[in-house]
Image (cartoon, rainbow over all chains, first blue to last red; front, side):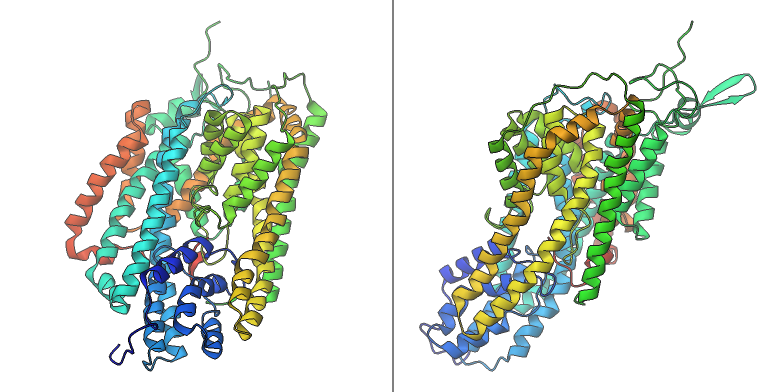
Length: 316
Length: 316
């Protein structure tokens, strides 16, 4: 900004705040398949355009069209792009030789990598982590053994705490990215990526995320095999006498790893949900013999068992 | 950055419709045929009916979960079944139980990450409508989860409709930009898409909840015992998908062993061990892990988003 004609062509703090607010609020208001967040981006540039090109119809038209191109990124960390774009627009309005192509290529060059980092961090780690905490505070795990939810009160602190924490995370990260992007420009992105700070945060958060996810798997995935195998004169119950002897909880662990593997191979998760639903219902069908009771005292004739392993046969 | 062409969009819609239809057949058609043949005398749980005002509030809540009016935080808060369940509970007069049911439904949608404009399943519809029906009908844990499956699928139809139709408003924004009409661009970003979104979210949800709750709860409460226990088995099995979806993002590299550590921690610690304790241990371990890795941390960072995010990334 060497030849800046000082005065009304510079961005004020309230313009930045307005633009940040518009982005935070309306980034996905008109989300669509054709250009994703394009109108959201243009909308967030409105206070900037008004300040820089106010009164100049031709420049306003050009600026609006410039920011209505395809745009899609992760709205928190991706707000860096808005800061950088505003800085470039300010220079351009003050006579610096910045072409439309330069602005567009900055935007489209940054939106991919930042979306990758941002989605990993926000949707991949932070959101599930806070949800896991919320779910466990609600006290769901205690109800899992009986399956009957009626009459049990959860702790409402769970959702409330989640709500507050995620709001703080989202708003503060967007604000920080936006303002730092404006102040430091492009070099912010390169310096942060080079310093390895992002890598450190993502690896650390990945460790924490994995640990909590493992805990969730142990708490909430329950599968009980219900059938016996007759070996000679001895009756061997598949769950207690065999699987649990190898390692307690080995079946759910193997099951979640199998699910992960099959999803990684590209099966649509909703399809898998439907497949599992059918398997569970088929697993409960008493194909031969007596219908199962709610909590049976011995293994029925179904393959799977709700609410805990079937107990030792009652002595007659 | 590949834009979905018209044919791809069409085939996506066709796939979604087929999926939806097959889910309906599986989740409602098959059990109701089965129950028609083997309906026993089952004591039906007490059913609270949903009043019109409650239905309107629930429809409004579902609309707000996807709209920008909560400073853009709807996607992080109301969109999550944990929060949705809590608020449905407030509306129906039992926030504690609502939060509990919401937490249960949230488990199967834990790792459902939306990136690059695609949505694998709609947690919000499952949360809002699923909790309402479960709460009104006094459904058990497994039935509430099984109900959330077709609802999550139905939600993707709404999502696709929105993403497709919103493309029209981008062209309206283009036209406004041609005339340097800032207000026109803003209207194209907020007004038209939000009116449309309201029509396809709040209106059908309100109608469905008001008219359909009794039908569905009657249907489920009339299921034979073996089918109900099949749904109860689902309660233990379906969370595996939510957890595995999240594992797809973070279960890799040097952080993966911590998953097993977390799993065994909960298995060994039993009911005493909470997720909160695990998370605190996780922070310590994360710090240790990153410190020990030192400069090699960037080789371990997970920055590659899974396949869904490859077309430009971005969230929601």
